[in-house]
Length: 387
Image 1 (tube, one colour):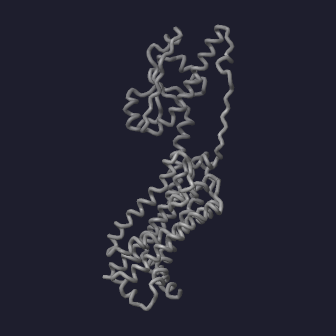
Image 2: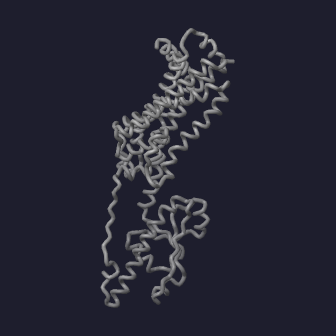
Image 3: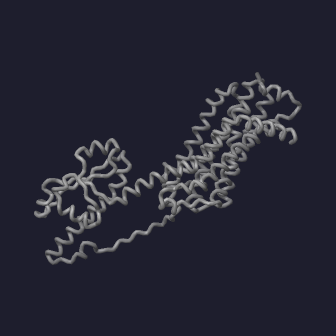
């Protein structure tokens, strides 16, 4: 253990000596929380500002004075849509859906016909698509009012149109609804830990082999497992440091939220940060061992970077399982590294938390992965020729 600690101290010193790389990694991990929250907040604030304007754009506004009167009574400002609104919607230069009123709209209403009102939006234009539901509800209210007036004129009770009363009850908590927006935060934390451990893992294995400093180290009369344990400890320490900084960065990042709604829904405090770390620290240790196992067979740093691409791809794709799996969480999710951590951190954001039984599974998987990979690196250094 004394030899392992000596190697650990040497590797930590080397990692701290590369100040440019270390500074870049540390700054990115510290800034990831505020930057992601600012981006999400700006998006939500844009939609909120669009809804608060209470504007409706109509093409052929002169054709529907009855519709205009109804919209104005709902405290909406009715504006004439630009002539090239379709082009602007496709180019995302126009942010509101457009209601198209036909020429014979008023005449059709008088005859008792059902004129066609079009709501024009672009599915690729998120801002216009977000406002389409609001316009649909407005026009549905206009239809109900016209139907009630027609029945009242004929002496028919308007209650016949609504034989039942509907009430909505949402079972999701405030924090659960917030994860529809903030659910991407665990992914960014996982990627920060990955790239934080990546440089240190490649430098302490393939980097030393390329510089020729690994062979003199192996000539020391020290057990290979002690050398590997010291190197792994240094890489894991760097990954854990990145995990701590990334999780804590969301605490001051909440001050930058521009949306009051999102600020009220996003509940992230010291408890959530601590639960994040309980999940991430074992993952950082296991990921460091995996990256070292991948890079130990490589002769150059560039070759190790190419080989680690598969690990990066798997870690980045695993959280997408939760996105495409519409049936909810499955028990096997907790057995898959990266996916298990993303699942547990999402539960924390929802305010649900997790029990010890749910934590023991990914913790055991990370421990097993760490032992296997560290043993593999030690075996490779003991048996393989170093050139």
